[in-house]
Amino acid sequence: MAIVGAGPAGLFTAISLVERGGLEIAILDKGPELAERRCPARENGICVRCRTCALLSGWGGAGAFSDGKLTYSPDTGGLLADVVGHEKLRELMERVDEAYLRFGAPTKLYGTDEDEISDLARRASMAGLRLIPQKVRHMGTDGCARVLRAMRSYLAKRADVRMKTEISDVLVEGGHVVGVRTADGEEIRARYVVLAPVRGGAAWLKQLASRLGIEVSRTPLT
Image 1 (cartoon, one colour):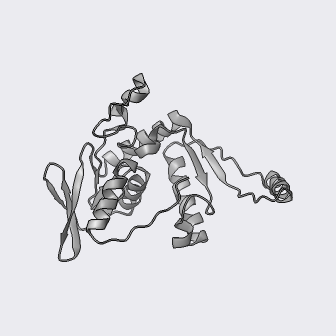
Image 2 (spheres, rainbow, N blue to C red; image 1 turned 135 degrees about the horizontal axis):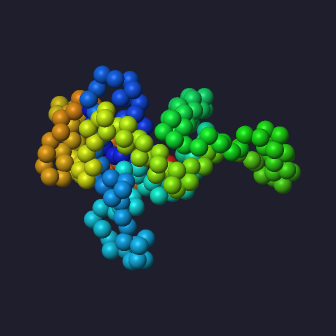
């Protein structure tokens, strides 16, 4: 199985599948390892338009250098609740949060005081507003990096991780996906392919979907 993208979607896909067992898994990403991600603009204030942006691509995806706030609510953040339903989405959020905890996220969870939430919701209603409660786990920038390193160590023993490996195309035979092709021309055959590029690969994914006749739609980014 080939997973394109080493951001959150790709990493959690890999973790779930290696724990289920029965598949040989390759994780492919055009960006570098977390420790090698360097941005000239952050260091000297000048963007030199690197061929592969280290802020957007690489192990951990675009959020690797964020302050690591994990916000859990089925009512905000996109259209996933419309696809899988609120209850299923809550279950998936719990599984994701358990994984983050297992890889070293702090145990403190914000937004759990029901009395305070009720009071804020009442005050918001009086002002003509609607309060959407959200639970938040704050890892911090250093904590985020620590969790990503733990995931890298875990997956290194259970999957073939290939960083700095750009995927140029998906191989299709007889109407079925059979693998991917790298920018260097190598063909990686796989029974299953998951396309989960980090933010740096969004334009590529849109172009690929258009070429393959796959309809795409926009979703809110929050």
